[in-house]
Length: 196
Image 1 (cartoon, one colour):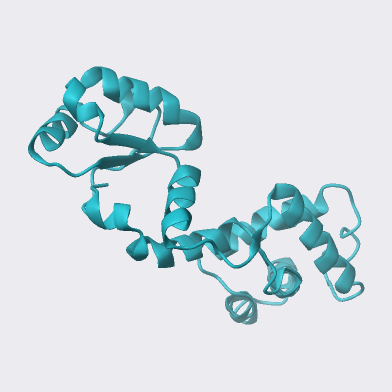
Image 2 (cartoon, helix red, strand yellow):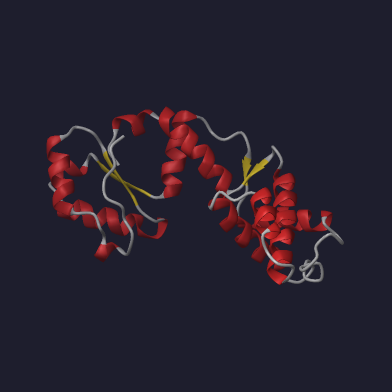
């Protein structure tokens, strides 16, 4: 798997060099995959197809993360867990919060407030995407002086454990899906044969 340039902004200020893509499509027989955010997939595909030679456009595929995931899972096997969407993650958090009744120090009074479960899901997703575990949060809390920040970290450690327990082996969220995707990329033939 070869890697191309990274897309990091809107389609007009894309880091991809169209001339580089044209050269690469002209010299190689491999399919060239360009990964872009979901909201730019069609726009980027149209811009790139308009900018390169017609023959090369058949070997160019613009994929969002969701489309890439779908293709990899079709080739290399789907995740065993049921994937939950935003609403499902909030429901799992609400289950986790119900199981923590009376255990949260700082957030104990907030757990039944509207929107609290959504905020927790967002924060825990940020921790998990950064590779942080409940143990990491507790370790960080132990290094803090007694105060609000320490209590927040301890509460988030409890929340993270409870959320992951609620997911169990049955459900997977976007973070788990990403981990499974990374593990399965090497098994997808189109990834081995294409350029990214």
